[in-house]
Amino acid sequence: MDKENPQQKEQPNNPMHGVKLKTLLEVLVEHYGWEGLAKKININCFKNDPSIKSSLTFLRKTPWARDKVEQLYLDLVKRSK
Image (cartoon, rainbow, N blue to C red; front, side, top):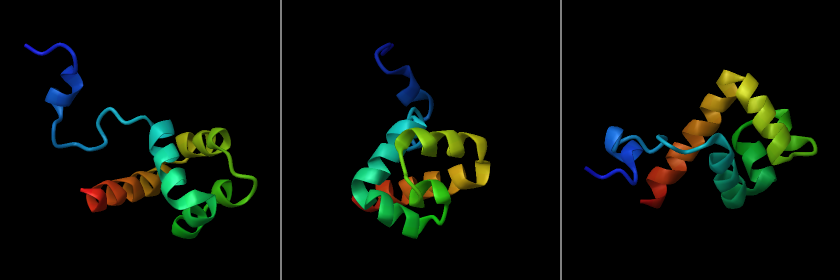
């Protein structure tokens, strides 16, 4: 039995499994930039003085916004394959 990465075996077809929100957000910011991210998802934490910390706080408290960010990440992952 492979004990190095048991999470990968539990959900091998789930691209979100094991991806932290912070990592996901950093990937999106690197790809789109804050301005591009604000155009894709119209939320103030991406428009007004954006930061990873303030965005994480908002996304953790706001399920609809987190869902949109996660979907954008999934779209990006699918396109890059």
